Length: 480
Ligand SMILES: *Cc1c(COP(=O)(O)O)cnc(C)c1O
Image (tube, rainbow, N blue to C red; front, side, top):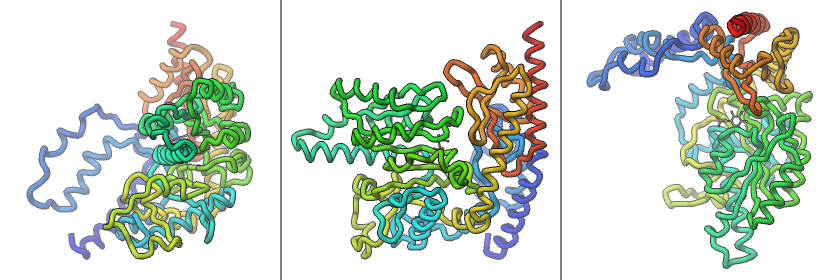
């Protein structure tokens, strides 16, 4: 493909994408294929000779689309949203064109500098405490990670290094291995599985703290675990608090947990992967109160802020906690400005070396929507969730299972887990809408998450009537 063909095909591709998204409502939200469907549809080897672009593009509808779950369909209510917007997709195109690997300032100065400034913009949108911002002279700052899972892992590893150095400074005879086996970290029993996984990867013990009746981690339960562990000679060093849990969007009590972390010298990391986007609205900002106690904070603009995957925003109060933990300087990565103290080399803030120019997506989206446009998107989703909640509450055969704060509604038929499993199966077999379940304590619960950028009140109404009809079928079948 030469440049003139690229011009033509590129415009055709934009048309294909626009047609796809414009017509997405007409496609079945969930594919009708069996595992292994794709292999028989394509050759067993890559072609020796180049093929025509037409042949490639024609295969998209034949081979790919039949196996796609349409996450941007207005009938998709599963998991949490994954963001998508036109400005973000255009920025991604430009990112592909520049195609730099921005591991150091020198590797592509704009890539680093735009990221630092965009993370300050975003931090200000959330009203993060000044200490988390880089500014011109701050000690904190933001970095774009690939995912919330990576952000938690990076925070845990940095905390591990910090506590190890502190203990070794006091008792030089202590080996790193002797310290590691005594370290213990805490998370709520409602935290995302990636949190426990960070402990597995980081080789430290993790303990789940039982959440309260509203699925929140509270001071008393954390304090109890701490006392037990300290009495047993363990070294508590790290706590993950979740704002907006994946199962039911509950909020750990930061104002209780934060002061304990300060007193016990434990690193506090906040995972607000989904809910974080809502904090740009003044009416939801109170949910972030207590962030001043945290050492690191993370959320995913790629979930709910109209920035396509991947873009996970992480801030630290002391960037030297990260750079001090992960820094290695082989000669082939050195550059003449690096010791000036004025510049950022993001490779020291993350696990991989390579990184894309992801801040372009933030820059395009912030400028094309404005803060007001982004706030309107969040508010619309929250209102649709409230609408669904009130529809469920009007039917006494159903119950709401957790407080609805943002865009997620947890609900079920009153009755057994078996009944609700049957309902979910009917919903997902009918393939008109798509939902996933969760467990809250020992209850099987259906999650209704407002996801699509283009979802409207009529889609929510349709989804509810569909669920209610299938619910009636399930109740009838139970009686027979
Ligand atoms: C979605 C989610 C995650 C995982 O996000 P990734 O970016 O895919 O790693 C972590 N924590 C919470 C609370 C989530 O909702």
